[in-house]
Amino acid sequence: MKRDRRVLVIVLAVGLVHIVRAGAAGDPVPPTGANTLASPKSFSSIADPQKRSAAYFTELDKVLTHPRCINCHPSGDRPRQGDMRRLHQPPVFRGTDGFGQESMRCVTCHQNTNFEPGRMPGHADWHLAPPEMAWEGKTASEICAQIKDPKRNGKRSLHDLVEHIGKDSLVGWAWAPGFGRTPAPGTQKEAGALVEAWVKSGAVCP
Ligand code: HEC
Ligand code: HEC
Image (cartoon, helix red, strand yellow):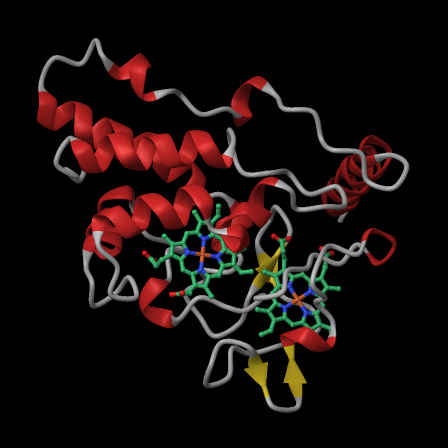
């Protein structure tokens, strides 16, 4: 009981720090050392081309498994929220098209852009990735095999993946997620550069 309470105090304190840090109207969270991405160049010391290619993907996996991406690529039928990837509250479900059930569409709450006063994330195309694109709970090698498979990646070529990860604006939301949320590591451009290096080196899986 005592221990439970201590945990609660810590959780509350951490929450408070977050709110204070996020500051007035959600200042961007300053990038920390841990939230960066290595550039393709920094892998040049890996002599074996196969190993180097797999290493690009392992670095990219930091992005793919980040809560900003996983929350929309969950294993079940409900999105997740926050850095702890808790189940979405209120309960909402993907529905037949990923945009929610008829009674509770994503757009009821999620607008075209983030709405800071309401701490609401937003984008014009806000919806859940289909079940075959779920990454939650998967290893880097499982995600790698899946993301290369046209049957499970929305019929995309490897080149499409470079474009999608490097330029798509819904993916880009993860680097400008609004109120107090930790952005995905590095920048979208850096993530795109890693995908490109991975594809050009034969898209080897770790
Ligand atoms: C009834 C309102 C409501 C509906 C409907 C709704 N959401 Fe949300 N959603 C929220 C709120 C509020 C938050 C912010 C919660 C927070 O960050 O504390 C949120 C946050 C999220 C996040 C978390 C982002 C992150 O990384 O922290 C995801 C993902 C998400 N919603 C997906 C969806 C999807 C997909 C749908 C439709 C299937 C949907 N939501 C429908 C209210 C709603
Ligand atoms: C708001 C929800 C949402 C967020 C946040 C999100 N995605 Fe997605 N993602 C989707 C949806 C929906 C699709 C399917 C759309 C399609 O196929 O055109 C998708 C498809 C993809 C695909 C292509 C299919 C596949 O699995 O290979 C990739 C790659 C992808 N997302 C990468 C990312 C990355 C990287 C992030 C985080 C930086 C991210 N997504 C964040 C909703 C989201």
